[in-house]
Image 1 (cartoon, chains in turn purple, cyan):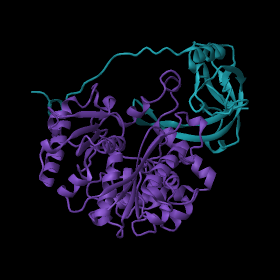
Image 2 (cartoon, chains in turn yellow, blue; image 1 turned 90 degrees about the horizontal axis):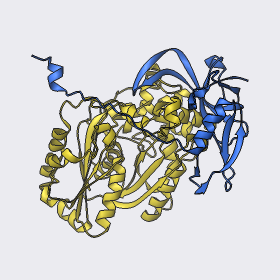
Image 3 (cartoon, rainbow over the protein chains, first blue to last red; image 1 turned 60 degrees about the horizontal axis):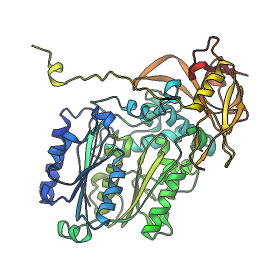
Image 4 (tube, rainbow over the protein chains, first blue to last red; image 1 turned 120 degrees about the horizontal axis):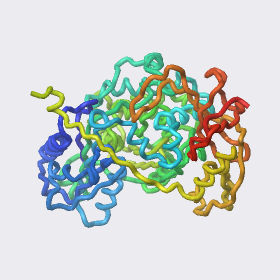
Length: 375
Length: 151
């Protein structure tokens, strides 16, 4: 696989079509291919955010999908990746181009998209619940269950901001961010402050998936999909323990089984996890078996998930640096692949042969996709 | 000549409404609120009791059709203090913090979000006992359960 990303922004300052054209055309040029080398085009976009039914209609032309096989996933880009992998495995396609984009920074109010995923007859009518409330309850659930302090939760966000500062595509970063900086940011819903939460973001991420034969023709440094898993939890927040993610556990177990991993925490060298809210990094790194359950305090206290730590998590800065709706999960997979290639710049971790990447959708990560990549 | 911002952006409002059938379980729940009753349903398979009631247990793939009266008192299991509110997706500062609890009504196994009034933010904690307060003049809406107060 290979990938390209925009430089994420709060306002990309151009129409969606130009953003897609420049990113995708530039990507083709970098690989020395044209649109005719693409077997199937798969979009990940959101009709509600775009304010258009079938939001990909005018996005087809800029990526070169006319007179081609093209479909869309109305979900995070990691699910388009899952679908693309299946299309390659079907044997019908040698290449699949995944195009994931979102304009939650400038085009539309970000939290409104998630508001409209809620049940319209009860939750939306009562008017108490929203994406931030759900995330705040999830953070509190983890803190209560495992004794995580507000400073330790803020340390997760500070790590994200520091890593994002070293990553030139990220929208929000701060080189020397501390927990105290996070706790001084705007209070939203306790215990969450602005810096615990993703910044509204514009941007896109594109990725080329190819069969083994075609991948070897296209690059001398192919990255392989070693395993993949996908699972869906209940929608109802009041009926599950928000401090854990059973569906991410199940998705990870499926991915590790496919990849033949018996001790993922020891075998995996780097993780990129979709965590648009700070506490989700802890909950999901535990669900993915990278650290023991309830270990947030120890991991943050010991710097175990830092770039130079025992098992770096989100060295890219993750979704706290940029979270273009739909592009976000694909960005994690692309960043994990760049790590394995040794092309992660100032975010580069020590050499590693195996990475895990994760994407999600829904309140409190209702739906999860986990993939193992190998170099 | 129009202002630069008007030329650079086309601002497109969408103005229409959707009509959703609430379905029998929620209809019964709303009618119950008018009588000061909180209704839930139990799953015959996993025995969970959920409110607001709905028709299906997704995990068991069974119909939820055993009616149970729950509350009106319950226990706060989780909470958040809203320093902001979202108005059409935009975070606006609150003049006074808003207390939101996830409440396990007596007799239910699920948690329900509710506004909590008559309590200071520092008093809000897991284990706090609260009681449902219904609208004096019911409107036939899920908002007829107005808020919770200390029990």
